[in-house]
Length: 536
Ligand code: GLC
Image (cartoon, rainbow, N blue to C red; front, top):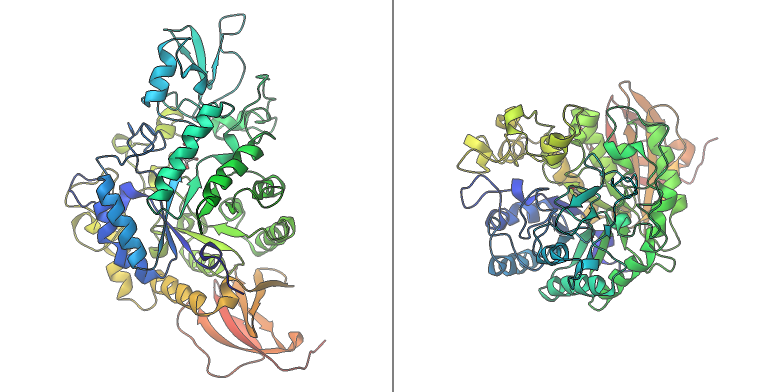
């Protein structure tokens, strides 16, 4: 059976501002990505996903788009983008763009027109509302970035809704012209050869048309993100959004072999609705559970199980270990477990998404107060919400500015960059980068590890184990999430096995054994052979 590329391969997320600066302004750009394409290809990833590269005032670092069909001059030109598409394809990879449909920048011409007069042609392209009786905001909805989600606009005497910054007004997706215009945006890039989109905050697109107040979240604790103070009953995951998603999918289906990925932070039972009632929704609603789970074997075994069971028939799973909105995995679970996490990500059933820099073990970089850039940290300071620490420049080598730029970059480079960098780790056979390379290679050579069946193995304590099988090829993945040794008997499974890869990168067996001994924080991939004898 052949599988689509987005089922088989690994997606690598590039945060363009921080990947490689080619023009010497301290911010990464398309020229930089072009320079580093050989590196991406050498990893063996299938597709590159670029966070937004469109014209933008950069209030939310590109997630505030002022022109959907162009490239920000800071990143390059459309001609350079076309070259990028060509060069990515020449190396056998695919290119995925970020699509930001929920809101535009307030500097987008659509909003400029909308706010100019109540009678303007595009007035209803956004969500305008009269004040409440007391002159205050129409209802209690709060912004994800702090404060009321309603912004008073003096000129026309109404409020507009913004789920994020006031510089990011929400579009009105009930308006047919908005839908048509935004569909044309997809076609513009699909025509240029883009292989798919990661859709920003997909579950936000429709809000309650009766503007009802959200109920309070009684579990809210100070220090939680501001919008956790409410249950977002009327602002997100509204039933009507499913129709919008299937329309987006129809646009992609006008072309062949494209992928629709949704950014959706919802509990699993709601997340899976975004595959669509007839698998006519997103191909891959992003599964963020590994970002949020406690890092222990029992919690992870339970969440895999829950996810596998919740998937609709034919719905393809996916796993995310890091992105530009969440702390680095190496910081969350520690470096020894970051290696185990790499093995987990690349051997679970489903499409993995790998965040740039995680493959070299980049950590959260402390940001001095005068270098803070993230608007979330500026609006809600001091409680650790700022995302700058996980958006710092890629560490390529031990030269000044880590080979990222010739000048001081827009965000500081990590102090560990003399050791944690691509060049040094490529020279070290036991580095996490070497581990990622080996894992990616093994995954590409053995379909069992990418598209094969998944069978959990019952374990206790700190061990997480499962078998992946395809066409007679079978592997046991055993991951020790604890600090003590662990012995796993294969004889009881009627199996013997040969370790083909350890997260320590220091062993490879030549003959199958009946027992696997795992050291602290060790994960192994074991090629299985059946002995035909199953011991009780
Ligand atoms: C998404 C993006 C995040 C951005 C937000 C608003 O969650 O990943 O970076 O701030 O949407 O567009």
